[in-house]
Image (cartoon, rainbow over all chains, first blue to last red):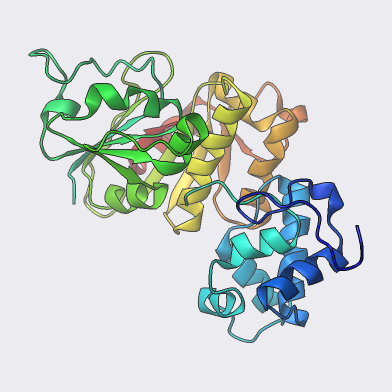
Length: 107
Length: 215
């Protein structure tokens, strides 16, 4: 794999093999989507990745929003804040760039 | 908004089928009822489709078992958000789950004093998938801000042990929903801290809950 190639992706756009993830891979996936991974997006991606590692599921949106406020990432953060970061679904997209499977639950 | 909800979470539920039989139970004969199929319960969709009740099928549970094939057109693909939204206005909830019997009932108290939902897990997960789907049900309540408590009784305590049990810990780590366990025997192996209750404590918890949902 060259520096510009991506590991194999599934039909849902998520990595087929999570162990092929790296921050450089995430950057390439985002660049392909025309998305710039700024500091706030990176905070979300890392938060989701840590949560999945710890609990086996992605975080609930209310958990992310609370952490965002408590850590002073975005003042007055809300679910709207998250949708501004990833309009197609903040947790799902963060999982994708974090090398995690697509969230299954229909919550 | 349905007044009566029947949650079906097992193919071995006691929900007598088919719905057209004269001795069919209230859930499938009652036009005001919402029958929600979740987990293994989606397996009975053919039997309840076309009954008088509105039949909703959990999309995630369905896709795990049947892939992209659509359910019977008489069923509505649905989500746990719809279930919990409907629960707000329901005065009765019956769960048809493991054990082959109707195993929960709604508290009739709607005077405003007892407004919480008690999600009670009284059976060990029958598979990894069943454990995950029970957790998803509870996480959905947490995600939607439903005032709920979670009680593990008997073999239900097994949800808190084993490699997949760590998911329950997020409920207490992030103060999402309180967890209780009735007379724990496996407390040392719990992946999430649950408050132990004696029999009197369990009865008090049930008494102050408006709806009891057995998952």
